[in-house]
Amino acid sequence: MKDLEKIELRSDEVQEILTRPPHVLIRYGISVACGIFLILFAGCFLFKYPDIVIGEAIITTENPPVWLVSKSTGRIKELLCREKQIVNKGDLLAVIDNAANTEDVKLLDSLLNKVIITDSIFHIPIELYAEQYELGNLQSAFSGFTKAVVNYNNFLSINLTNQEITALQKQIAGRKDYSSSLQNQLVLRENELAIAKSTCEREESLYKKGIIAQAEFEVAKQAYLNSQQSLKQLQTSIINENLETVQFKESLKKLTLQYLQNKNQYYSELLSAYRELIASI
Image (tube, helix red, strand yellow):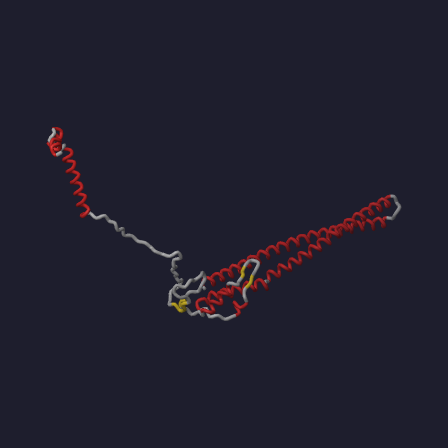
């Protein structure tokens, strides 16, 4: 067996492979690859990859806390909540030091929620302006509101313009009935005139035939003329009545417009004072 291996190792083919040096590309290629590998290996010690990225992050909850900023500065007079307390919209959390009585302000706020101010409905709780309150800096806004309430209430209850409007409406209604009566009289006067004219023409025909005397004809003619004059006077009265009715209606329009303007003015002042008081609270 050993003899066979020796024979195979010493064969010409094996000797040719073992004695022939490697190709140049193989020798330099291995050297280059080893060099690159050594450079990368050395670079792992010299160059560090920044695996730590520095940045900012905000961690919050599903319902994050909210910053409350007061509209005025000062020391806290009353703290009405505790730490980690769940609060709802509209809850009173704290009171900044001021001259007002907190209970009076809370009562005033609850009464203001009952106020109804619209074009058709006006409701103000009597306790709102019948009681005395300690409101401090709110006093000027509250005084302006109560003044606007009194002015608007007086306007609605004892407004002279509204009384004049009511009186004019009654006069226009009365003149309408009077005008209707004049129209009925006009029909009667026209009938009377037609009869008087017919009588006058008949008397004139009889007079020309010599059947009646001139005096009788003149009486009929005078009656006809009187009917004409009476009809003219009635027509003039109707025209004057229509003109006066138009004037009354124009006066009614002006008073109504004046009433609406005054009402809108007082209403705007009241609504503005109400909103200002709410904002001040």
